Length: 320
Image 1 (spheres, one colour):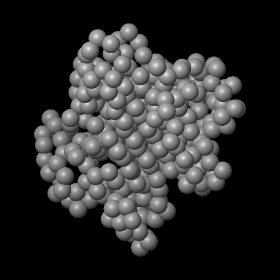
Image 2 (image 1 turned 30 degrees about the horizontal axis):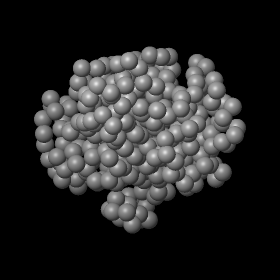
Image 3 (image 1 turned 45 degrees about the vertical axis):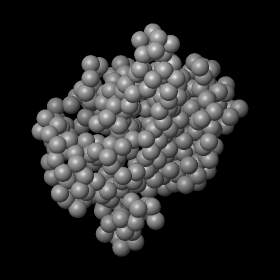
Image 4 (image 1 turned 90 degrees about the horizontal axis):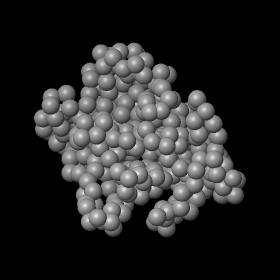
């Protein structure tokens, strides 16, 4: 098992590794700050291993965090990048989206060897402590690349000694900040099958050449490509998701009616956010004792948009 340290001991190690700062966040909750010399930054709360901020070199916020987000455990934080594990939504016996997002994580200064290959000095390794009902080891790394890219790598290892397998679903429930939801396009999911959560998860095939938004949207796209692009015309910016080990993608916006029904979400905030989530949902991951799973998500931006004439989004998705 990887060594584990309490949040109080993490500050001493922070100065020696100089890869992160540990400070107090809202309501006195511990948070980690990652900084790149060029100006980009990220903030991660130990509560939920929850990324609450990701800013580019111009200090522009790229993630959406509700103005009404509640930073009081056990309530999950509304916005940023919650981790849905070991269950996505209500697809199982647990509370919606599982327990990882409302557990306190610890900083791991002696991470497993398979998490050390990160080209950035701005990173932090977190670990979710096992309990009697949860005999697994889950290391999670959040890193800020030299170009401002945000990278998250999760590993799940089944350490059960009773021979029992362990099955789970997973999602990085990423809330992106957008200028206007009606001006945003998502490319890379066209022609794919999806489960429509607004129609009892009935299966359909995407017909549009891109996703656009005019009303509540809640779909699980299946067997998606490793790259997806979010094009924001007004901000003249494209956000690119690159993912490994996460075959599905959830796209969600609550729109006005559902937004008003959520106590931790502003009535009009749906206009300025879009969730595009890297996930493993359709086929749950099953690990036998001793087996491991790895999921990786990398977020980057291109200072352009589909109307700027500077970027062909198809090339972004294809990797050129």
